[in-house]
Length: 287
Image (tube, rainbow, N blue to C red; front, side, top):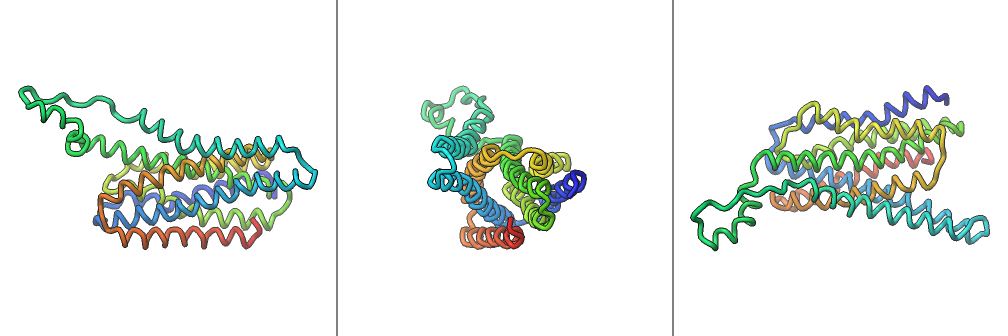
């Protein structure tokens, strides 16, 4: 498979993410519908989490097997293990730290003449009752873009697999990978917009989120065609895993306030199964 063909098909695999994004513009969803869509997206993200950690661990375990057979060094295994653990921490704790820094720090002062009790209670009341619509919208869009970044990191690693297979001349494998990742990425658009709830994103925001989430598949195919690096691939898997776990926790916490717990868990299971089915297409081709 030529470089130009790899580039074109890598772009196709990545930009199918745009198929699910327009759902974020719908304003006809009830509270139950929003919970269902958000938890469906959590199910997709849960599968991606399992998938990226499985790929990451397999890289470390392969290096360990080589060391046991006298074909590698213990230092290489230790470095890969540190990359896995450090990348996961950067994706989870690192994102949490960045998100805390991004929160608005200014809080309205208590009304003049208010009682001491009211002044003491004011911060908690502000958080629960007086958070204005602009802050709610900004937080929802930050969460959605964080999901897009996490998915994009994961998709970069997938793009690496496409590029490496194409460069090695494994055309059948590369084609199946492209088809499988294209179908899989189509569901990831729901993962980005599902947690937005009643917030309606602009078309510009959706376009940026699609580029952030899907574009790295294209970029990864370019890098994978010319460069093969296990530590690089492992780092992207690790950071993606940590980021996805952080996002799952944020969305889960937000959806608990809306109720419909049983419906949400059923849709989470459906989302997870959709991830499994689309990934089986990749596994069928040996990816």
